[in-house]
Image 1 (cartoon, rainbow over the protein chains, first blue to last red):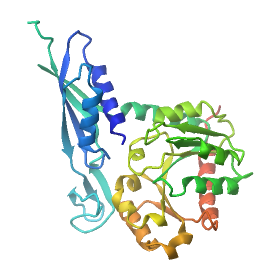
Image 2 (cartoon, each protein chain N blue to C red):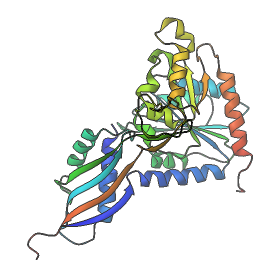
Image 3 (cartoon, rainbow over the protein chains, first blue to last red):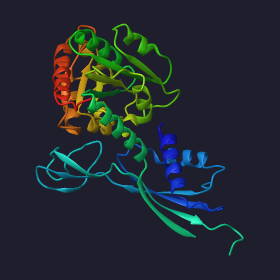
Image 4 (cartoon, one colour):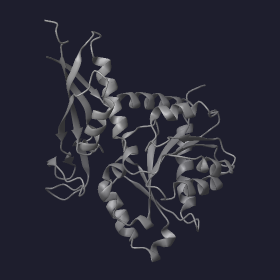
Length: 119
Length: 224
């Protein structure tokens, strides 16, 4: 259960990038998550909701863009999605694979609401 | 509403501290391994056998990670090596900053091999670089032969596999061949050792490899 620690890292990064003006509220955080990043999305969302209470991120939506596990096969050159539990090239069955995507865990961007009542 | 672009790795901070750890250890010519496994696979027993075998041959230091208690550090301290216990108090893995703090409590001069024993867990530690040269994953025969398929990230991120408790193969539902092949399917680059801490089988070969790697790291240290 390291999702709490991951959620905390996300909040830290967001707060670092928030302009230092009063009353800003983060309404959405977009995250890229690879299929082999070792993170359970439901659990991450739960932790994120819990630790953002009372912060500028309270109520923010954590939008997760999932990236599949893809690889390049050294034997036949095939590039594409692979099944994480098989770890074999879907084209030739070889296992000399270079992972292309699937390890990502990155904060893409955030949506920020201006302070209410200021127009 | 406005959008602020961030594009930052979530574990960037951990990776930065890990890079600092790696540089510190490199300067001292220390070969560092991060040992991972599920709970009870035999990490501490392998470490004890290793310390016994390397006594007088290679100066070793140990960082022990556990959720609670300093039982493991006390087991290791019997071998008269510098040992620091990190108690994560619930945390399921070690992070680079915990290792950095532990390193401050070890006299690194003269050490050639640092063993970091991670918290028993085959999921979370695979995400956290600690500054090690490589990860060693331990899988024991009592866990069955399908562990590599169930936890591919850990086997993929490791460079060495130790198959432990080989003396129990006749009594458990685990084929060594299948376990080895499953692991090599996930990661063909794995160096594999087979050990038993009860009989001592395989320990000399594992220790010879450690000595060789440590001497390689130590042969080109920068001047201190």
